Length: 219
Figure 1 (cartoon, one colour):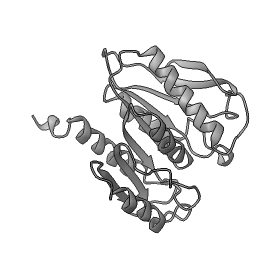
Figure 2: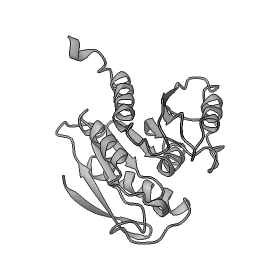
Figure 3: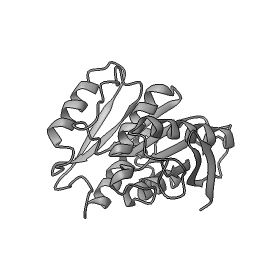
Figure 4: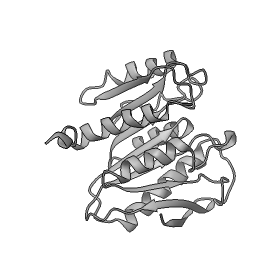
């Protein structure tokens, strides 16, 4: 898998990019958990989500936010990280100019950043938010949410409790023309310990449905 570097607002950003072999393939960007709590682009959920997109023909990018790994800069409490994500999308669009659509996926802190990017970039047509920390970060900017997507979390999550995430989902579901699906993984904590396979299966199933791939295996 090609290692890539591109320029962000705080300097060099390191990433891993897997271009699709198909012309006009969609783009996917996967955002990692909180940098100050060990989050990197090599997080297992990020890695597995990345490959879920690759396996479905996307040109996929995962990268380290500023101050993580070999990415320059320092943690900026979300504002700088949102700029990093915007720069990442700019870079992918520059190297895949024929891409017809774009998806964003994020894990925990990365879900919060991804949803903010969604509000700013109308070309993003789908999202997957894993364990969005609705109790810790302000999601009120989603008014209205511009794209349909999946919110998936565990019912044993003590970092981002189920009730807070369900309040967010209920609010988003009231918006006309937007379909927000929710998947609750039984027994899963915030890190999906021993539940990653179930998480990825849920995300993959949602992707297949949105992409029109569901059921094709049986044909």
